[in-house]
Amino acid sequence: MTVEDVLRAATERLTASGSESARLDAELLLGHVLEVDRTAVLAHPEAQLSTDQAARYDAAVERRATGEPVAYIRGIKEFYGLAFAVDSRALIPRPETERLVEVAVAEVMRRLTATPRDSNDPPIRIADIGTGSGAVAVALIVALRKQRVRDEFSVFATEVSPEALDLARENAVGHAAADRLRFVEADLLPPYIEAPFDLVIANLPYVRSDVVPTLPIAASFEPRLALDGGPDGLAVIRRLLERLGDGALAPDGQALLEIGADQEAGIVAAVAEMLPGWSCRVERDLAGLPRVARIAPPRDAPPTGGG
Image (cartoon, rainbow, N blue to C red; front, top):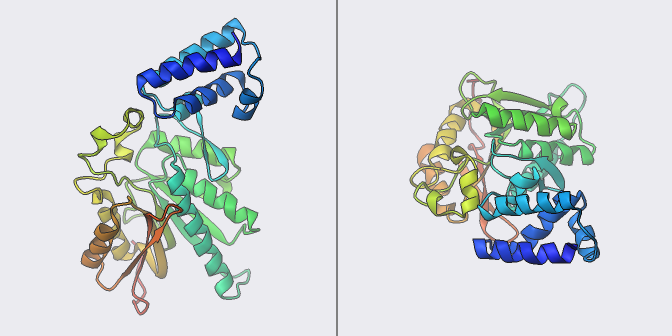
């Protein structure tokens, strides 16, 4: 069978199964089986598949038809211009989370350029809370290195799931970022972890518990722990806010927390209630939707002690 033939059949199969991106799914999976990118697939519709290739493609399409995410079938997901290993150990990186990385990179660069630094200055201490696949932390490190920033920062990543932490380590090694990352198995940012940090970033679960069962079937293959944010979606984030107010953030530090598009009022109210006097400003993504809560202590806050 030709590429055109199998793509047509796969698209029909995936459309019948309920996929909202049947043609794209079919093309990506065929590229995976043929070990070429999607452009090459589209450029040669007349190319013939071997019997083995056709069989492996059929198997991949059937996995997708049951709802399994394309990223898990391929074993990779593109994020912030990088290819990350992904599987059921951790949440698949979302495009909207790239905004969190953008804001974090800009904040680090602002700190590095705001005042002159010399070799005796300590590095900017960054904590990535709930690192999952490690995509945010690794993308941040790679982006800073492209800006010729190397030794002026360090990243500390926590994750409650040991399986996800193993995946994060694999991605850090794969992108030559492991030398700037320290991984710790922990629930959020417990008191025994070194603090304070200059920058805390986190993409924590923020989907409301009652919404999780209504998500597309692909989400059912991902760890619920990485999705379920409690009754209002902010339960896990509130636990981190409590820790921020208990000395985890430096007096001039900032926390950058990804939120849902409908949670701007909720996060502002939570910060006002739990961290009186702290500021909370919400950055928007490319679609103009609320995406990253920028949280900071009062400017005249006294120095905080370690946890």
